[in-house]
Amino acid sequence: MKHQLKPQARQKPSDTELENAVLGAILIDRDFINQVFGELNKEMFYDPKNRIIYEAIVHLFCNSTHIDMLTVNKQVRKMGLSEQAPSDYIMRLSYEVMSSHNSLTHIRLLKELATRRHLIDLAEKTMQDAFDMQKDVFDLLEKTDTDLVKITNDTFGQDNFTPMDEAIIETIDKTLLAYQNGGMCALPSGVEAWDRIIGGFFGGELSIIAGRPSMGKTTVAMHLLRFIANRGENVGFMSLEMTTESLSYKEIITEFHRYDPNCTLDVIKLRMGKLSSQEKNMLIHIKENVNQYIHKIKVSQKSSMTLAGIKSKAKELVRKYNIKILVIDYLQLIGDDQSKKNDNRNLEIERIANGLKTLSKELSIPIIALAQLNRGVENRASKIPQLSDLRDSGGLEQAADNITFLYRPEYYDILEDEQGNNTAGLLELVVAKNRNGQTGKAFSHINLQAGTMQPQTVDFSFLENEKPKTNLVKINLTPKNAKEKSSDLPF
Image 1 (cartoon, rainbow, N blue to C red):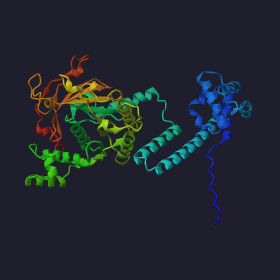
Image 2 (image 1 turned 90 degrees about the vertical axis):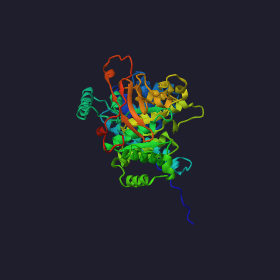
Image 3 (image 1 turned 135 degrees about the horizontal axis):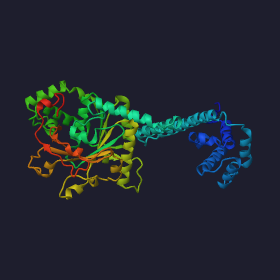
Image 4 (image 1 turned 45 degrees about the horizontal axis):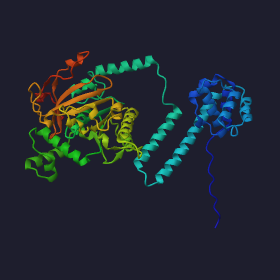
């Protein structure tokens, strides 16, 4: 049997001569470092001696110290690394380069070599992790994707200077587009009063919809997703609490109510199959005539998911279906990938909220996270939620671009408002934070059994006041005329 030699590890791509040429140019041309400092990093220098010398140069540059052969040599000695990068080597770098004429080309080539090394390292690490069956495959995909994006950004550059006149022109174009679209360039919620306050949902922004249990968070979320889907856009819904089957039951009930507003069918009857013959026929009709826009709602259901898993799923939804908005139900159920033994939940929620905000900017879509409130609201005379009621808030409040609380007076047996109006089915959307505008209230009529909403007529005169004394607005609890409603939508 022939003896098989183990294959030797291949040398990673590098070019010491190019590294020497770039360092030499910096040492002989005092202005060259000002031109190229932003293009360089220590990872571009593969030779250990050259990396040490570059680190010395960075220290001198950041401390506004003149850079030449002598100052660099002195700094290397201060770093205690003169044996690894001796003075005669530094002197030779200065003598071997005549000018910095071709150094920009040399830097570009060094960057390409460094990128190749990064890709090799990522491939080796990914292969090692892929063989580890204890690691979650979605977390692995997310981490690999994130690392690959970082390599791309490091290579091609992520941040560029934008002339202010170009930024102004682009912003004016967006405003004119909003004007052409009837005052809306963001995605609308389907509740005009709400949109008038927050301006709709914009790409790159994180919105929070929060409330106590049974306030209608999922109903509100599905309402706005239906509304946007009916406009022809694909939308995403990630449920960490409800199964896809449970959501389907709710949507079937909503469809029943679209045909028969007085429908008494509920989820329990559907689950048990206790249907009248008329209800059975209606169920068959719905099955054969599912609303056209429903297929545009893409649902992802997983009871346990970390932030990394959500990022991976969200990118998949954008890549496969080009979704325009993502709703997550709900935020406090998201696991923290970076959780440590001594971390409190506030810190974990802060990392999760910041991660969702970053994700919305990366994907350029609005992300709406539903959130639970703590029990503090139950112990106050006024049951209207406040920012302090956000469970594990802190960083959550800071990361969100806008926060809307849901409040139903009827839930607390408040059957009339101060003017004596009936509050049955009344939903208050309390905008408690709005990074790009003012706060206030919007009103809607909600039917939790049907899973539907109907906007109410609202007086927005308070928005015109420079310093409004109150955010309360007049409401008319009479539902809009049925003729004003879209025949395709169940609200």
